[in-house]
Structures are given as C-alpha cells and as structure tokens.
Image (cartoon, rainbow, N blue to C red; front, top):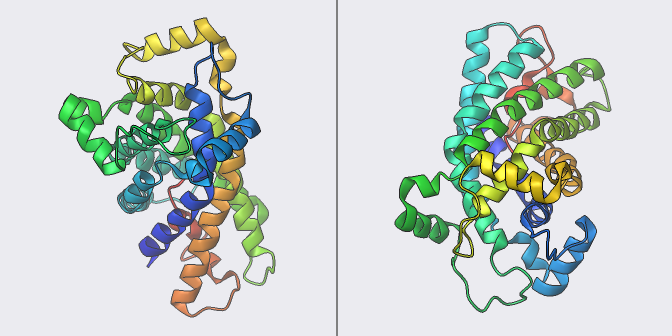
Amino acid sequence: MDFVAGCIGGAAGVLVGHPFDTVKVRLQVQCIDKPLYRGTFHCFQSIVRQESLLGLYKGIGSPMMGLTFINAIVFGVQGNAMRLLAKDTPTNQFLAGAAAGAIQCVICCPMELAKTRMQMQGTGEKKSTRKLYKNSLDCLVRIYNREGLRGVNRGMVTTLIRETPAFGFYFWTYDVLTRSLGCDLGDRYMIPKLLFAGGMAGIASWLSTYPVDVIKSRLQADGVGGVNQYSSIADCVRQSVKREGYMVFTRGLTSTLLRAFPVNAATFATVTLVLMYARGEEPAPMDCEPPQPGPHTQIQQQPSSL
C-alpha cells in the first residue's frame, strides 16, 4: 500500500510542480544574447500569454510515465539499505537516500531528457506549427533512432552527480526535522509538521546540487535546433561561465524553490491521506507510530519527487 500511496502522491506532486519546472528549464537554457524572459514571473506570464495555460504543462507525460518505476526503485533501495545499515540514524538516512538516488537515475535521466525536449518545443508559440515530437514517448523513440542508447542517456553523468547527494540530503533533512519537531500520537499539529519537514527537505535537496542541474538541463536541451553547442560537461561549464559568469548557476533557482515546497507538501499530504483511508484510520497521527525506537516510519513512505 505504501508503494501505491507513493505513486499517487508523486502524481499529485507533478501536477502541482510541473509549471514551475517548465519555467525553470526555460530560464536555464535561454540564450543570454537574446533572452526571451526577464525573470521567473515574466517567464510565467509570457508562457501563459503566448502558449496558453497548457504551455506550462508541456512535457508532463514523461514524469508521469516514469513515476511508478522511480518510486519502486527509491522505496525498494532506500528500505533495503536501511535494513542493511540496521540503525535508524540521520547519517544512515543520508546513505540510504543517496543509494536510492543513484540507482533511480536509470529511469530519471531518459525521463528528464524527454521532459526537457518537450518543454523547449514550440517556445513562444500558442499553437506550434512544426512539432518535432508528438509526445514524450515519441521523443525518446526519435532520439534513440537517431543517436542510440547514448542519446537517450544524454546527461546521465550530471544526473548521477545531482541525484546521489540530493536524495541523501532530502532524507537526511526530513529525518532531522521530524526528530526535532516531534511526532507524538496525540499531537494535533502532526500533519502540518510533517508537511513542513517534507517541504523543507525538498528545498534543502535542491540547494545542495542546483548548479549541477543547470548544466544537466543545458546538456539535455543541446541539439534541439539541430546544432550541438557543447562537447562535454566541462565544455558546457566553461562556455556557460565565460558567457554569463558564475551567476549562471542560479538560473531558474527562484522557480525551483517556489516549486520545491508545495510539490513535497502536496506529495506528502496525498501519501498520508491515501494511507489513512486505506487503513481506515481517523486523521490522527497514527502513521508516526514507530515499529522500533525512532518516530520515522514516514521516511519509507516519502515519495521520490523533488
């Protein structure tokens, strides 16, 4: 049931956070010489005005398709890692989360590649006259036919560098905050505390690796117009810093942080409600009752959407 709840919660998180992600990607990869957007809110307004509200949801099919597999990997690896480590401590939560983050990159990287390509398609057009890709699956198929497995896994190294510590900090932050805030059975503020902990964990995870995400987005968007600008990760970093300075690594950060809290809050709230409904429980903090010392049963229910 935890797996089903996690999938539903993850879907809720994608629905809430995808518009922010679209804005983040557009800001990260736009040309500095002829920028289309002045900032986060101008980007939001421009997309809605030029491409309609649906423009904010371009590429949503890819993360929706990948959720089941990603959650299965994250829950399985994180749970087994914690059992191997035996002791429930913040450090072990970090290690288990990092292991889960690294392994789920197998699904995450192609999923985000398709998402990025779809988000960049038809930029500034209300009705795209020339679509390269019909949908996320068609995008991956076309990339595979043209570039093979290497093309489908474009950005895998940067995804691995981003996801491994990000998931570690995610689970570590959530564990530390839930320990600090307390999780008593009679606490009427249990759910708000858990929502706060989940939201802050999402913010912490993004802050820990955001510069890598900027490079990953640029590498995955590279070649959309038929011309490859970067030859490697180092070349992408070098060109980006040379043209835009070190502030390039904060491109889209505002949108990302605005997205991080509600996404994790929505995801966690959905997981909690689904589990309570399935177990026939009253909306009281029963989910916090630990099977062993340490009030952190939720850690294994926390979805993977960052």
